[in-house]
Amino acid sequence: MRPLPLALLLTTLCSLPLLGQSDVGNVFGGYTFERIAPGCGMDYKCGNLSAGPTTNINGWVAAMTVKSYKGLGFTGQFTGNYNGTAAFSSTTVTRYTFQFGPEYALHLRG
Image (cartoon, rainbow, N blue to C red; front, side, top):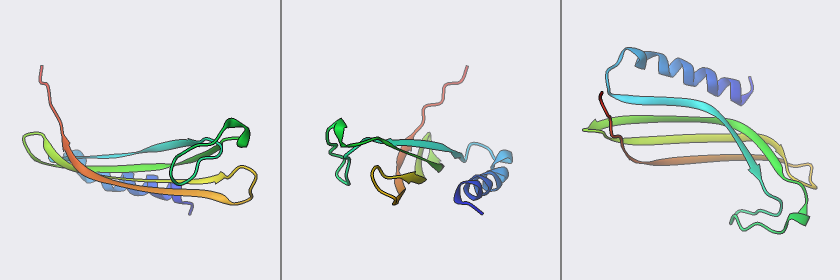
């Protein structure tokens, strides 16, 4: 099975138990699109536009937030982008990112 459908299926199945829960946390899953400018390297310093065409890559994002005290929580986000072909090359582009940190949510009740 390909990574994107597998990730969407896993995100959906893992989020079903949270439908019956109260205000304990959030689960998010979605699609990502990334466009890499020509000449960009690992340091994100991009060259001029004459370096070649841009590279487009598609992927997935999954995030989970666990709330602890009065709107304060902790979030982890995972992203995977695949199947882009680098300009002037036959190599494929695959990029994973992992982000973690505190989150504060202000809930307005009307």
